[in-house]
Image 1 (cartoon, rainbow, N blue to C red):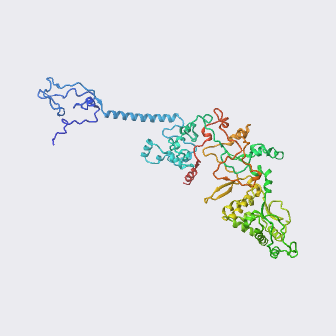
Image 2 (tube, rainbow, N blue to C red; image 1 turned 180 degrees about the vertical axis):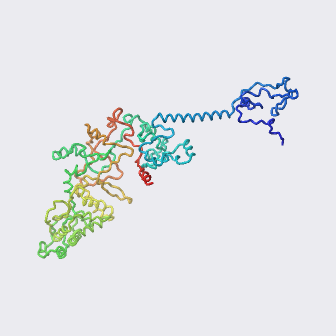
Image 3 (tube, helix red, strand yellow; image 1 turned 120 degrees about the vertical axis):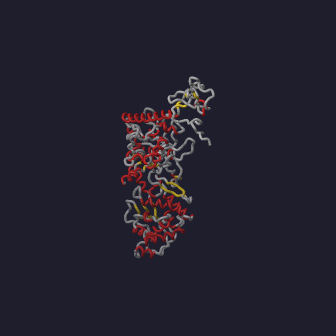
Length: 637
């Protein structure tokens, strides 16, 4: 190996700390061996700097440049190899130094500007994002920024990373806020796929650090247009027409005809003094959004309560009997009747039934007997009468519970005086009509002549409701076709608006639904159905009632459809026919025309009343809040 291979005479070391580079090296990548001076002048105009040795000039061109030249220096000691000068260029060191000074200067300038801005502008903080809204301030009082910003509780590297990467702040919103669907789906709903639909995040609409008085829920209608494909200028300009069933999309639980009441009943002289003065005579504001009908006792009872009390239930009826199967001695002993009393003297006379009627449908079902064949029901019915004379109400209670999916006889027979039914059975067993000691005047159970009946005592009579529930349940549990037919006959009579106890089905509707075994089941929604607004809509009746009080009326928006038959009963020939609402069906349950958009735009238009999207529409599906749990935990700590 050669010793001087790396000598500076043979191998040049380009020092990076020099401030200038050779101009030729920049252009042709072949710089001279001397390079520029520290002042930036070209050092390559000559190839060497001759030196004087014993009165003789000697060439000292280095080996890297070819060694001493043959010509040698001139007589005056100058290099004979002369070249035009180059223009040296700054080295990388100079640019780095300048950039460093510039960056430091910018940082200090920004710090100075931020400090000045902090002093001059309200709610502007360069080193603090600013005060947060009043609705969120209580959550950061203890733990600070890390409640929302995860990087605040980690290392400095995480802070640096957070400064150059997108912060997923909205993931922390789910610690307090809940929704009825996916958190980061549009409208929190799995809506149909579309190329433009993408995941959303809270910061797309909501902003923080704008001060305690800032409303984080407020945004503009233009933000809605950013995502929606069907864009329009405003509600009064371009908004799609409302649905054809708006706002009457639900199914009603009460059969009521506004048409017949307003156009007929309230105009009759005998009812006109009871008619309400207007819509608000029956409908009351129950909350900010909804109007509800008043209670039956307040708005319906004056006309309809007497009708309810007149619709009675026939539990037992002494029918026409073809033969006497009763042992009079047994009856006389059970009833405490002495020989010679009425009905006991002529035991050997030919039997002649005092009744020409048929059994009640209730007893026909409970005893599983035909209601039109005396030979088929006489013995079973007379056996029941003897049992009633001996045990009073117990035999009937056993028959009821035997037919019901669960014990219900106690509720169905509530208030039935055991002595009354015993005395009626004793009279019937002797083929006599029962003559009650006093006439029933206040409702409830009573026996009279050939029947044991129940008269409802009020609108929400519990005994009547129990019998209706029994009638709804029993047909689905019967497997024998004959029993099922008799159960259906009893049910249809019980649910008849004309003959049913209390006449409940004159107003209350029946819902039909299929169970898991595909059997039809019936149910009755006794109260008003809760009105459910569309999931992303809101409406305030309260604010509109203020307009009504200033001269407008409810029919301004709710126009009566005089051709509507909703709420009317079937024709008289079909008065006992039972109709059901099938589950899943959505008939328009109203006597009013649908509300059109132009009805709303009479007020909600440019320059008059608000018409921004947020006035009527909600973004989030069923928003909830679980922040109270966090507050409780903080207090406990």
